[in-house]
Structure formats: C-alpha cells, structure tokens
Length: 368
Length: 128
Image (cartoon, rainbow over all chains, first blue to last red; front, side, top):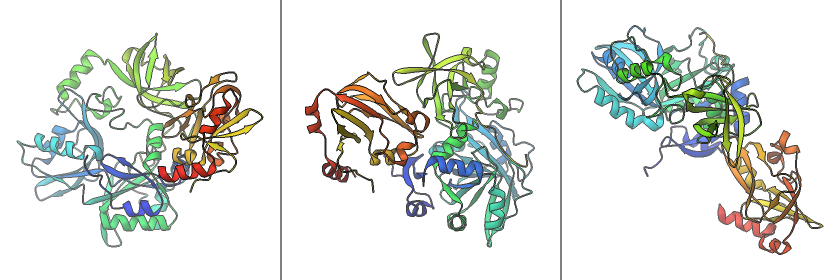
C-alpha cells in the first residue's frame, strides 16, 4: 500500500480536531464538527473545503487545443480565455477514464494553454492516459498536482465572504469562468465553480498562499467543511462522483451526462463507441429513486423490481436538506422511466419506492 | 473523551444494559455515538421479537454508514423507543438517557459476561 499523501492544509485539519480518513490516496478531513452542521453551513451561509487533493495538469504547446479536444468529450474549440468546461476523458469503449474541468488559460508563446483539473484518485492514471494520447502531438503536458493547493468556498454568502475577508470583488465573475488575480501580492486563480449546488468559488494557488488564505478565512469564522458533507451536498443536486455514478464501466451517456459529450466535433477518444451506444440505445441508466418509507439506501445495495435485481445503488442518503430517503442507482434501462416502481434491498428488508429525477434539491447558482 | 455511566453493564460491541426487575434496557454507548457521527435512522425490532445475546437485532445509521446492533442479552423485546423514529439524533445528544429497546431477559447468567463501567473503561483504553 502506497503511503497516504498529506495536503498543504493537513496540520490545520489536525489542529482543528478533524476526523481524518483516507480518500483518493490522501489523508483527508471527513468532518470537523459534524456532517449535518457543515452541510447546513454551505446551504445557508458558506463553508470552505480543502480540495488540494485534486490533480492539476497544465497543457501547453502548438497542439494544445487539438490535444484537449482529442482526449476530452466537451468542445474547447471556440472557448475564450477565462472559460471553463466540464466533461470526461473516455476509453475507446465509451467507459469513463475520469470526469474533469478544463480551464482555458491565457495564451502562451506557443498559443493556447489549458488547465485540466482531475480527481485525486485518478491523478496518475489520468496523467499516463493523457501522455499516451499526446504522443504524436506537439504538446507539453505537466502534472502540477503537487505544487497547487486548492480551497473551495461554497454557499450563498461565498461572494460576500470573499470580498469581506479576502478583499476580492468577484461579483462580476460569471459561472464557469475564472480569472487570474492576486491576493496580498501573490498570484491566485479564482473560478466560479464548485461541487455543492450552491454559488461559490475555487481558489488555486501555491501551497503557501493556500495556507494563508485558509488561515484568513478560518480567522474570519468561515466553517471548515469535510469530505463527508462534500458528498451529501453534491449528491442532493445530482452531481456524479467518479467511482459511483461514473467509472471505467459506466459511460457518461448512462450517467445522464450526454450534454457534455459533443459528438458533433470531428474526433475524440471514445466517440465511435458513444455514437454506437446512441444508435443502439442504452442498456442501463443512472436514475434517482425516492423510497416511500424512511431508510438509508447506500452504495452497492441491490435495486429490485418484478422479483429480480435490476441494478444497484450508486450513492444514497437520507437527504439532509429535505429529509427524504433518496438515492441514485444504475438500473436496467427498462426501469428508468420516472415513476417506475422499484425497491431497494436494505439488510433483510426491501423498501419500495419510485424512480425520479436525480436532482433531489434545486441548485442555487449565481451569474449563470 | 467518551462518557461512561456508572451502574450500567457494557458489551464489547458498545451497547449498554440497565437491569430493573428482569427487564434489560438497552442502548449504545457514548463512544459508539461519537464514532458514528450524526445518527439519522435507527432500525429497530418489533415488540415480541426474540433477541439472542451477541446476535444482530437492528442497526444504527449515521450519515456515513450503517452499524449493526448486537443484543447484549437474550430474551423477548417488550418495548422499542419510538421517539427515535422521529428524532434519531437523540442518541447523539445523550446516549445513556436515550435507550433503544427493552428486553425481558431469559438468560440472567449472560449478565455475568458483560463488563461493568470500570472494565469497559479499560476495554476502551485498549481499543484506542
């Protein structure tokens, strides 16, 4: 077993008494106080997350644009500097290598430059995959994951907090765009992005600067939030987590993320498989399920209908925001229509419910 | 530091027992609630169900995970704490004031296999 990595904020987490646990090869805070309080802080005010475990690759060189469009399902062809796109890297069979954000950075001497932000657990796999895909191209691909720290500031008060505490006026920043700015003289990249369904920002900077920003936010009383509520928050608004709703064997089409797969662009790895799946129809789909009775449907629990197993839960909770017993599940496509009666097996009992939208709680984005 | 209440008996799976007139009141310890975090659901048996010592009789579910409950005694369930259906977080507030089930015990000798407060204190120290 490889030794767990520590982020640049590890000492702060320990000093705050966080419950620490392995995640994606890192030792990460799961909760500082408790998941419900941290979840509610983000929904009602704001909270901050250490997301320094995320991976960052910088793409540079004359073929940078061609390369990104070759490995990435979304189309970076015409996007301007400062724009961000969400999408996936795919295997040739349409399975998902990872889901990621691509930032179009300011052009360099060799033309377009991009920042790819990938999941912590997939950093090495993604980097190897991207390097192999770049082999025939004039492109430089740098894994800068160990240099960058990252903080996500999320919640309806995130904009005000950034202004009051960090002196950053982000009111003009549009959803899914970023700017390269400075804080106390140090370079910081700020994007209006997140993984909670709330308005908010992600700050990327050197580890030292990230430690200072974290300390300033903490000093101002911003609630530190762990990965526990990061999951309950993203789940409620139907955002996927790699390894659950997306994986090497789950395509973005099955996950309901087809709008991020641009089959009208000339070429990308996995395109043929995606076109074939579209032509043949999907065999499985990720759906939402709401149970009629209170219970906790968890990842891996069987989903049943017509006396047989028709799928399994990918993520589930008693929603902290709504109190409902809900889950996302990968099920046979024949049972995916909204309102279909299905049941989830929890220990010795089955709990009936019906399929529904994956969004269990409305998103509250700003500046869209 | 987890609280340990005097006068109760304890199991290695972190349930407590309070004996009164042949009825065992059963709950989970402060250590158990702390390690689980926010409790959101308690899966309890029905009155008249039989339970056996060290066998599963339900589960406590936190936001993150489900933890099975093991009965510290054998017998028949006489009552379940219905307040936990509406407010499972009571177990986080005070794990000793909020019980889960009451059992009319059938094997009094089993009580001797449980720990007293001092022994459970030592047991927790060794677990940590």
